[in-house]
Image (cartoon, rainbow, N blue to C red):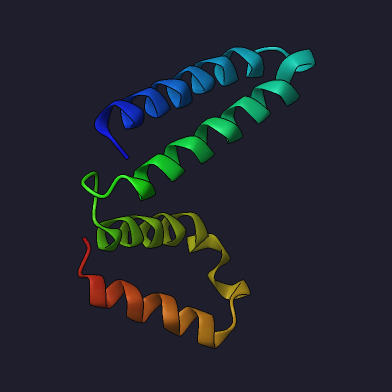
Length: 97
């Protein structure tokens, strides 16, 4: 994927995020705003994963695990022991603060 293609895809996803914020400001258009936001995020994630020099897959995985850890802190008692052990051991191996 060339740098120009990446720039265009990021520009499209940024515009979709702007349209999503605009759509979410009114109850009548909130569904369409939500769809714009989802499509923009999918394009941004796809572009990041396909463009190799943006980040390494290790850093992307570490960021995703950190987000899952932060979001799921209040839901830890709902996880089974094996899943909880896997998440904790993966985070310990990544050495993130």
